Structures are given as structure tokens and as C-alpha cells.
Picture 1: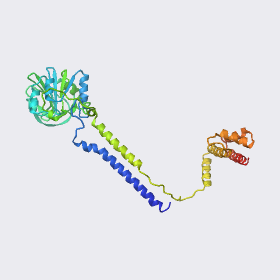
Picture 2: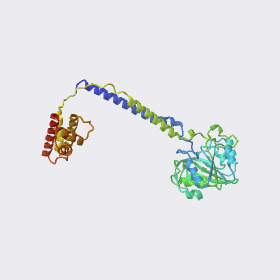
Picture 3: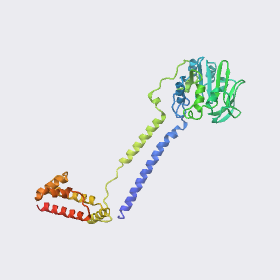
Picture 4: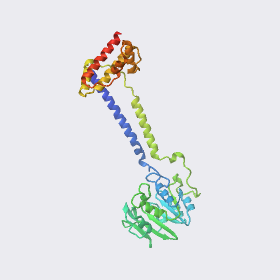
Amino acid sequence: MTATAAPANTRSRGRQAAWITLLVVLVLGTAALPLLLAGGQSGGRALDPEDTSLQGGAALARLLEAHGVQVARVETPAAAVAAAGPHTLLLVTEASLLNRDAAGRIAVAFGDRLVVGSVPYLDVLASGVRREGAARTRSRAPECALREAVRAGNAYTGGMSFTGPPGSTGCYPAGDGHALVRYTADGHTVTVLGDASFMTNLRLAEDGNAALALNLAGARPKLVWLTEPGDPAEAGGSGDGTDAQARSLGDLIPGGVKWAVLQLAVAVALAALWRARRLGPVVAERLPVVVRAAETVEGRGRLYRSRRARDRAALALRAAAADRLALRLGLPRTATAEEVAVAAAARTGRDPEPVLTLLCGPPPGDDTALVTLAAHLDTLERQVRDS
């Protein structure tokens, strides 16, 4: 290779490396963009019975419905109070945005209450229950006689420990109290848990979480599930008792799908730019070595001989001879070997059968037969040329 070609190849490799590096950086940046933008986002509506993200509660809602429990999703305290009745259970989670007035209305509503997670105004929702301090959330044994907890067994509980009023039942010991406290007052059964993780789609299949969630949330024929409102301004309740507004088709598409489509579009655009880049004009370059055609033929012949590939060598000889004969006989390039043999026999006045055997016969059995075949092919070409 000449000295001029070497720097050119070096520059070409440098440009290719630069483009590849740029492509990798852009792809990695596109992949990291959702993570950076999602830093302050939850990736879904936490503890929402219609949310299928890891933090949602759709799995528990479907499980309850499969066991005959009616799940009523409400977004405002006013709607929750309106839906409550003597045979209902009102579920309040840390995703239920409340103010003190709304908590007071829920506290006097019909039915039982299930308060899960770090819910504000616990003194209103569950009077007599005191927070004793934070507790690490982990798998815990119930260590109590409460039927719902005993049947569930170990569950992922903690978050906060509580002590209940006299006559209450505590389960899942944590810190100086229990992660679950239940008591009855004024005809209401109130259950308080310090962490709601066991109810989410992420944790529901672990330990006895599904059983505990089903036993607690499915204690009544109807569950009124108070969740985060679509408009935070409605957290205090408007008092009209309306449920969640109808959502558009775009709202039903998970956020991860949108990010996946965006990343795919960027990747396709980058690939199009990469493939559309012009390579520039062809550069003529002197070959470092000139190889004669005879040397190529001899090298291929030695390769065939070393592998005893007489069949492949004979096929190559016959195909080349047929192409040359077809050109001399005025036949099209698509003519078969049989057609070439018939035309060559007619041109030379020979019997067609030997010519067919020569161009289309079986492969030679040894090297001597292969040499003889090559000689007969040369003779046939010479006869056609001289005829």
C-alpha cells in the first residue's frame, strides 16, 4: 500500500470511530432522559385501584372483585362519605389527600375504617391510637390472635408502630408497639397499619401480603377506596358526591409506553442519519501486488486437488466451456448445457450423444479422467471455432 493511502485509511477509521462514539453517547443520553425527568415523578398513581404500575393497587382491586367484594373508587372525601353504609369498609391510604375537616367527616361516616400508611390526622380517623415511632418495613410474623392476620401469616409490614386504646388488638410487633392495631368504638371497627407497601402491585405476591390485604380490605361486601384525586384542589371534597371524571384514551396509556416510543423514534432518527451519511467519492488506489490470472488458476487447481474435489473441478470446467461455446454458437446466456451440446454437435457434425456426455456427464472418477475431460473440452471448443 502506498504512503498516501495509509493516512487516508487512518483518517477514515478516525471518522468512523467519531461517528460511532457520537451515536453511543446520543443513545445513552436518550435512555437516561426518562430517568432524569422522572426524578420527581411517581411513575403512576400510588395505591390507586385502577393503576397498574408497581405502586398502584389494581391487582388488589381485581383480587377483591374476584372474591365478590364490590370496589368503589372515589376521589373525594364527600364521595367517600356518600358511598359509605352500614355494611361497607372505607379504605383510607397515604395517597388519600385529606385536611382535618375531611378527616372529621370520614370519622363519623357509616361503616368500618381501614387506615393504611402514613395518613395525616390519625387522631381524628382513629382516636385512641398513638404513634410510637418509625419501624423498619420487613417481613414480620403476626404474633397475635387476630383471625385475619393469623390466616395470612408473615407479611411485609412496619413503617410505623402504634399502641391502641384499651381492648384493642395489636399484631406484627414493631419497635415499642405493633404495625397493625384494631379496635372497636361507637359501632365502628377501625384497623390501622403503619405501611401500605404490602397492598401495592409490587409487593402483593410476596409472603402473605395478598392474604392479609384480602382479609382486611375484603371484610365487608363493599369497599369504598378513597384515592388521590385527579385535581389536588378537590382533596378537601366539594360536597357534591361525584366520582372520578371519565378519562381520555391518552390517560389510559402507561407512562412507560410513551417513553419507549420516544426512545424508539430517537433511535430510528439516529440510525437514519448514520446510514444516510455520504461516504464520498471513490478513491483510486494502486494495488500493492499484481497477481497474474495464471497464478490464480493454478492456486485454485491445487486447492481442488488437495481436497480431491474432482466433481467441483469438472463442473467448473464444463460450465466455463458451455459459456464460451454458447457465445460462439450465438445462443443466449440463459441456454442450458444440453442446448449448447445439441447446437455444438450440429455445428461440428458430430453425434449429439458424446457431446452431451462431455458437457453434462457424470464427474470423473480420478485425476486422469479429469485431465482427459479438460482435453476433450478444449478439442470441442476448437472444432466449434474452426467450423
